[in-house]
Structure formats: C-alpha cells, structure tokens
Image 1 (cartoon, rainbow, N blue to C red):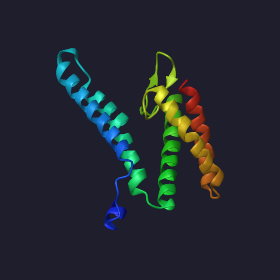
Image 2: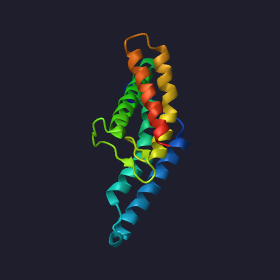
Image 3: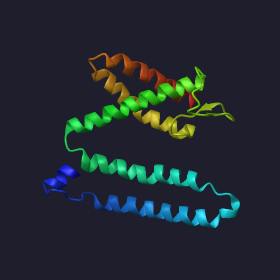
Length: 168
C-alpha cells in the first residue's frame, strides 16, 4: 500500500470484493454488539465471541489487503510465504510436544471429549483445515530449499502431518 501510494499509482481494485468484506464485517460487528448487550443475563462470552469475530472476518480481510496491496514484488511475497511456513512449522512442533506432554507446555489444551488435538487455532476442524492448506506449501518450501533449512522443513512437515492426523 505504501509503495503504491508513494508513487501515486494506487488504485482500489476489486471494489465489489472490498464492499462484500466490509458488509460482512459490519454485519458481524452489529450481531456481536447486539448479543453482547442483549445476553448479559445469560453470561454471554463477550470477549471470546469478539475474538472469534475478529479472526473470522477482520483478520481475513487484513490478510487479503496485505497480499493485494502491500506486497508488490515476488521477493516480498516469497518472504511472507516463508515466514508463514516457519510459523506453521514451529506451531505444529509446539502443539505436538504439548499434545504428547513432553513436557506439558500448557499452551494448547486437548479436546478431552473426543481425544482430538487442538492447535494454536483452537477448534480441531479449523486447525485441520489450516494444516491441510499449508502442508502442501510447506512441502513446496522443502523441495525448493537447498540449505540446512531443508531438514527443519522436513521435520516440520512430519510434525504438521502428525498434528493433522491428531485433529481427527
């Protein structure tokens, strides 16, 4: 955004997509506010529902904005992609260590009713979907790596696959 804006070449592309995101976020915000005020006596989880709304709407829109407007070169896109791959690898490793209690880090709980693993995203289905999306990208990073990071990518992929299986 700043590179395009500095060159005065910035143009809002896909205006209908922005409008749809903003409309959905406005609807989510209105629903959250009404629920937070209306369900006070029912012990409504206001903070938890706000964080869920933020993660499901606002964060996705911000992620789209970054990829559409802030990343202007191939190197920038690859840098962000590699950073996300490393985050996936580290979070999978920590989740696997915590799930196996080697030691119990207390970072992620396990879904005690079904025995399914929870990761940094929380709900097992969401975490499984996240991993199913990013594991192929991690494999691509592994295959294109020629450094000592190749071992770390391989280990991270194995941990991510293990966590995908444990999410059930």
